[in-house]
Image (cartoon, rainbow, N blue to C red):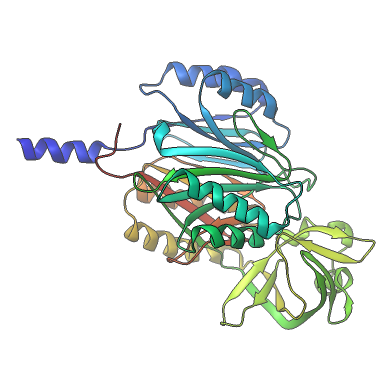
Length: 396
């Protein structure tokens, strides 16, 4: 009987969570109030993904007044899948209330007004290291044109490359104007939301998959300045991009989400990078990561519904590697929804079928994950998800 009791207690250890969705800003306060009244646990930590037009200040005030820590960002669409309903909204918000112990996490909003990317990353890395001896982190960046991969590299310089890090880039419903990250009491237009976990008690495991294919011939970047690509094959970068794809420059950066460049790495792997802005005056393309002069790339595109099979295989494999989960957080590239339309439901649904726990997330401008035990990187056009699990014997 004692053995049965111990086993039962272990199987019941989990992070409790409840998810609610708002179609319109006016519904938020009443839905939050109704959700709080119906809970059988005390919420400590909330996740929020909201459309660009959502009243961020009122969301912050509501969570602050209820004493709930908030990890949040604007998005380009929100996602909420569970056993009762599957919801995708281009405009709206999804909120997740959880009872992760206050001793096992910390949230920090860090603005970046003065630091170059590597030093900004170093500063974030120091914050991560200071809170727990064994940390993991969820992170979301705001600000268009930030050199996010260099920030990530700066983080890993301080924490070590084995840090478990997951997250993405905030969106703004394809306006490419302003993205935000925020907590219950701070907001940053150009910065990072940092959610540090005690990895000894809260397990964070992530995966990513893309499926985009290269298109034809290779090109060489012959002039660049950080995140701004000035020339391709000694011609203005904007002219080469629009000419090859036979599109108007007015279609950018929106059309660029579907046609990222595929960088050819020296180790034989490929890295996708997406246009985030254009500089018509300089005829340049702006990305969310620096791209050095001399980089070789091809254009790329989605194969359409075939990417569903690629995702299916990777999710099944990831489930075999990490069968336990209390909650799933998803950052899916907005380009995936643009490419496969309503089939995006099928792609997302598989995760909830395998783990049978709530899934919440957003459509993003970029994704961050550890995949197959590699160090964290910035991805584009990817389906990136993390499973959050409380480890045994640590429920307070």
